[in-house]
Image (cartoon, rainbow, N blue to C red; front, side):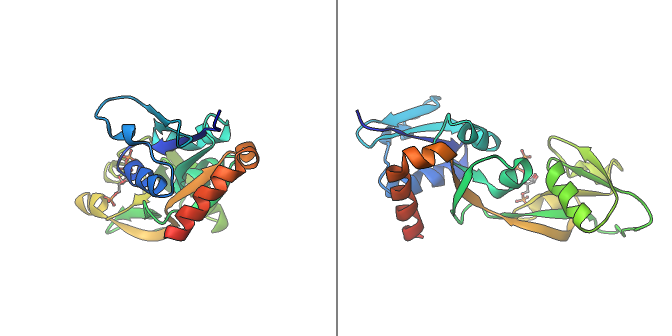
Length: 208
Ligand code: PRP
């Protein structure tokens, strides 16, 4: 029986692009285009099985070996530091992690800075490196509202086009790190399925 490569794809627009890259790299699975709500698709002849998972969960599937490889944003890798190999920067899903605040915000270094974010580890590491005292407020979404309502002074969040910030009268104060989608692999799969994984890395890496 053929060894199957199990791939966790981030559900959504980025995932569609990633699938196209994998297809071009020799891992097609045409049934994935069926218009249904299935989450698992496989092509035994091509030796590949795809799972659609929540983008922020991809690294969990890969770390625990439920998927051999997957594609996750650098934001998730920095925030949760999963024990996986990062094989390739796919150069898609590009955005940045940034500090944003209302236009009239002026930082007062004498005061503890209130920071609202989904990415508490990234924010904590960033401000510790600057020796800045902060009070972290962990939110799960709609982060942009926090400084408007006085819940926080600034936010640490993902900025892609900048539209969300603009429409909420916020602007970028500092860029923390550029973000893009990365190909990741489970550490033991990387050894046991090295033939398929290396082929994929070669094909995708070479095509860019
Ligand atoms: C992110 C981020 C911003 C938005 C920025 O949210 O939290 O709200 O994208 O994009 P823009 O600069 O192009 O406006 P995302 O859509 O990833 O979903 P989320 O609210 O679940 O974080």
